[in-house]
Image 1 (cartoon, rainbow, N blue to C red):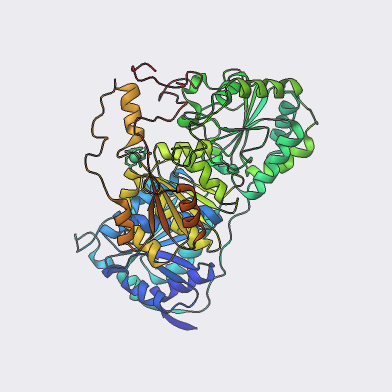
Image 2: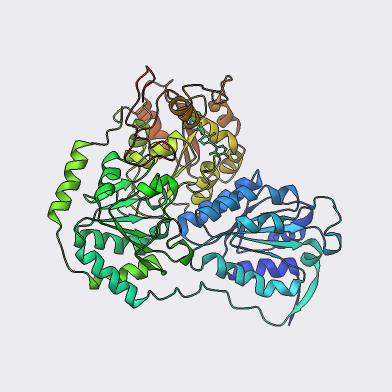
Length: 562
Ligand SMILES: Cc1ncc(C[n+]2csc(CCOP(=O)(O)OP(=O)(O)O)c2C)c(N)n1
Ligand SMILES: [Mg+2]
């Protein structure tokens, strides 16, 4: 029997779950938790500079490891600042646990100082959430939160703990065992048999991998499926890395900014095998024109995804990896030479060239050159915009958990804190954050965190003095009326970085940018390299929002015709 406060109990339970790093910011209503954390030997606290930053740091830890990331915020404004990071985690199925302080139980509902109903506000952006009213409830709530975050389709949770629950002293007879994720549902045998039969019959199958397939084990099985059965594989933004970029049967990313040959091949497929993918509109384009000739096998651990957007002929509600493992021995080896030749010809006829890719001072060249300086252990994060789409198209992703990008919510400001989280989780690795000038400004305060923690985060800033992807849409779809998307004021990012204590280099100002960048990346610790690029340079191909994927725009001339 041991006496402890709710705050001490919380920290003990987090330690038992294996948590080693918590990002966050203290305030009045979570100070008891912080005081208990101060006494923890097992958990290190990382002081973020904004609670959204803390949320994305936790996401960076979770996305790069597959394990739940934890972050703390105080009540009221601290708590509301976490909502974007939670919504982001929800849409990309990332396991994070946000623990907020709340005003004491007796004050709830009185508009007390820094009171906000974060329980109510977080309902639609979390997988599950709690308002803990009694310290003893923590004994079940904390392990359960870890179980739910990591079971089935992962997702974010919020635990709101009133201050008097944190300070309440209780007698604890025995601490509960750390929780484990639930066992996965077993793939249905009949459905598997039907899927195997459909695959064996198909002459022109294509695999479509999403974030649900982006784990090392599933990727290994996916590669076996591709190799042994000659099935080309396309990936959603979140699926990149499941099949390595250089693989002969990799089609890279499909959809809005995918390769033309990929979207065209999808027009011809007779069987689409979607694995851990959710038919997002950025991937499918106009839904009723997507893969018009294909039957669909849909494998997803979240049964509510099956037939949600595209009716599945065969739906398997199970883990992606376990389903592939069961399917593989049921498949007949087929070379599918005609189909492969068709793929090769389409790729040859529509090569995905990247303008200036050999010049490290170009928008694509900086991505390729950076990639050449690191190996596949490097972790890559991006922000949101043209630079993000270019990285998705041109970076040679070789494995899963290497590519961390905000896909579903598309949150500017994700890149830097996510990179910090990845670097904290993997101190032996280089983490590259490709960002844009608009996005970097959204969480620029986290430069202080990167410097303080001496994280090995290399920020590559493509500066086009504006909101490039917005300009691209205005140029293409609003008759060139650029409005509220160009920055009139120029920002000196080099001095800003240096002001935070981070070495920085402007690649346009240095005699040998290639050598300069190499040196920045080789020196341990954070740094920033900035490159000026033209706002008028657009990302192609592009499917206009709402159009069919086959109607991609390939390029654009200055006379204004797409
Ligand atoms: C938080 C947030 N606000 C607004 C948007 C809409 N948006 C999408 S891309 C973009 C421009 C991004 O600019 P920048 O980071 O400089 O990238 P670039 O496109 O110029 O490479 C905007 C405003 C968004 N995705 N996220
Ligand atoms: Mg920009």
